[in-house]
Image 1 (cartoon, rainbow, N blue to C red):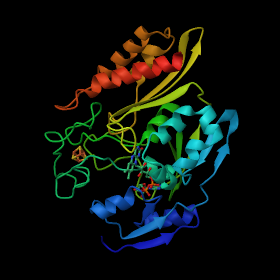
Image 2 (tube, rainbow, N blue to C red; image 1 turned 180 degrees about the horizontal axis):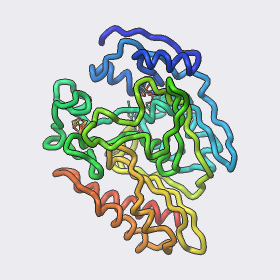
Image 3 (tube, helix red, strand yellow; image 1 turned 90 degrees about the vertical axis):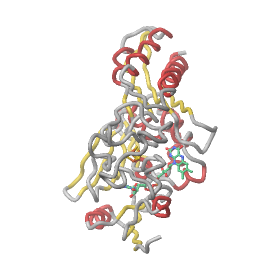
Length: 322
Ligand SMILES: Cc1cc2nc3c(=O)[nH]c(=O)nc-3n(C[C@H](O)[C@H](O)[C@H](O)COP(=O)(O)OP(=O)(O)OC[C@H]3O[C@@H](n4cnc5c(N)ncnc54)[C@H](O)[C@@H]3O)c2cc1C
Ligand code: SF4
């Protein structure tokens, strides 16, 4: 590993100044340090932002919450307000990684973790995301667990975070400190589809510091369901985060996001349109899944994800509306 400097930021302003000068933020380090060991990234200087005063979960008006970027994934998952008001978020967090990793992982780092595409993590292989213009071997090679929606000829990677999928369904707002002041990004909206610039995972500029995530009104009828290759310690093959309101047997305000299917958490707008006002029946759920997945463009070895996504979406909606 290349030698690197380490500093601990005391304030957000201090961190942003260091970030603008080329330093890399360190949260829990559970992704960044792995990538440094693999040689995928080689920062000269790390600035530890895990001890900034961003570790609080605060009440907001209308039952919302403001979650500091340094809150650990374990603490967020078990917070009573999260468990009661946003079960989809608690379930997504607990479906991710392992207990030890969640104890270290921060909200900011979780949102910005990098793809698990095997070529991205192997510096002996070309990869447009790691080395722009070098090619995308995953297209013709190993892509069983890569994207079926929104990919480009330049990259077919998937975004790995479970938490981000729940935040996309909840329509969370991500607060970011930049050298020019504060900015916010809606979820989805922070993460990008690959297009012609797969090296850019998000809309953030170098040095932008995530400070908090804000949740609006509670979503008590919500759930996260994840299919993975083994029962724990594994990334999503596909996942569904869903929140619905039910009135007189009809669905209102459905909010659905898919994970493991695209370069960003995928908000299922077509499924939501099909569900709004529909009777909460298996036929409606199936029609919503079909509407969303009509746009799927599976690759040679991941067509199985299309029926898998349909089935887990239908099952999740059935559970939520029971
Ligand atoms: C074996 C294993 C299994 C895993 N399984 C899952 C899983 O099933 N589901 C899942 O979702 N995740 C999984 N993970 C990933 C894990 O959730 C992430 O590694 C973790 O959430 C990253 O958080 P961190 O604080 O450690 O980030 P770090 O590793 O510290 O940082 C990640 C990135 O975020 C940047 N960063 C950190 N904080 C900020 C900030 N405040 N503002 C701006 N940039 C920032 C860093 O510069 C870096 O680029 C797994 C990881 C491992 C090692
Ligand atoms: S899918 Fe994306 S991350 Fe994977 S090899 Fe292709 S360009 Fe790299």
